[in-house]
Length: 193
Image (cartoon, rainbow, N blue to C red; front, top):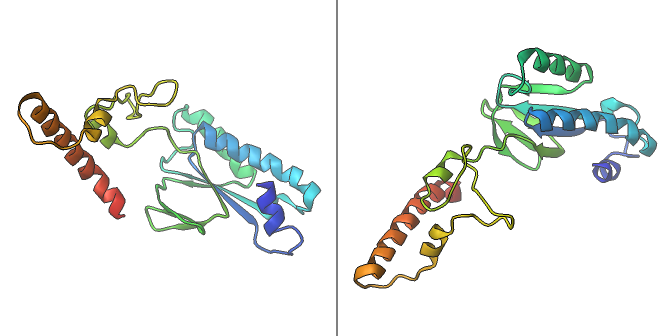
């Protein structure tokens, strides 16, 4: 952040503040916004005139800040962030991130020089539907200490070369093709987009 600010803003008499958008208003996103606000005071040593030279925005799909916490605590935190000048965009699901900024589901474009993804840890539900890969209760792949999936059966089927045959080999290829077709069904929309 320091380097980006120094290169693009210091000494250029820019009227445009450095814009930082944080996607996610859970504990990570909220803490990051508070820390970045604190860092703006440190930037004064590099020529930052005032904290208004940095625009912080938090974008959250839920309608409540810190959705996992009690409403009273979330409301108090929200009031504190607003008093620090953090712009809160609640109830806004991100649909696109570009070099220029972030677009939400309702078509709003939020300009951002720096974008930080701090939203959720839940993986897409379609991962649960891929046979042979173990997932946990929030659809994340279960991995070992080297970050390899603990279930490798699917991966072994994918690399078995297609062979015509009978018996056990034919059964493996039939199963392999079923999994490949299922994977293509889920990946094609992602690859086309």
